[in-house]
Image 1 (cartoon, rainbow, N blue to C red):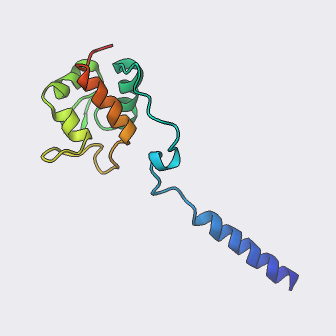
Image 2: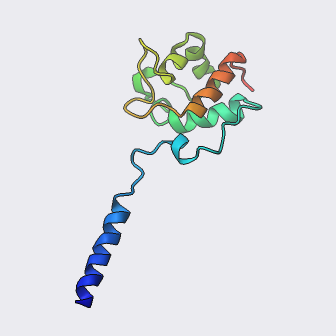
Image 3: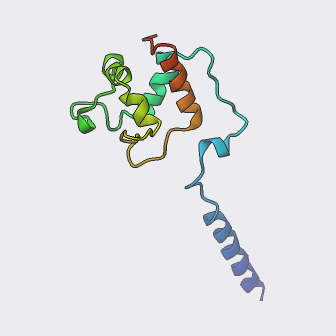
Amino acid sequence: MKKYIQQILLVSVCYAAASTGCYYDKEEWLYPDTGCDTTAVTYSTKVLPIITSSCYSCHAGNTPSGGVRLDSYNALNTYVQNGKFWGAVSHASGYSPMPKNASKLSDCKLTIIRKWLDDGAPNN
């Protein structure tokens, strides 16, 4: 009987651990109190890390997806100036939503990008 109870306990613990995965979790839900720091938004300190982690896997290197390179300020600025960058990352109607086949960037990341764009998208 003791072995049976131990087996039930083990199965219960395994089930509980397996059913609490984070697949659908969003950054804002997991870390709601961290806030979004939009002070001192610059290309190099705030925007580039977002672009690097969210865009470079497809839009950098010798054969960027769709021929769209975002791996330098000048390359990114082309899409900033014509509005396609914001349209894509904000999932605006009429634009191909980016990152492709992935979740929309977090509200904080979009706020940082929008602040940088509103400040004139300087190369700083």
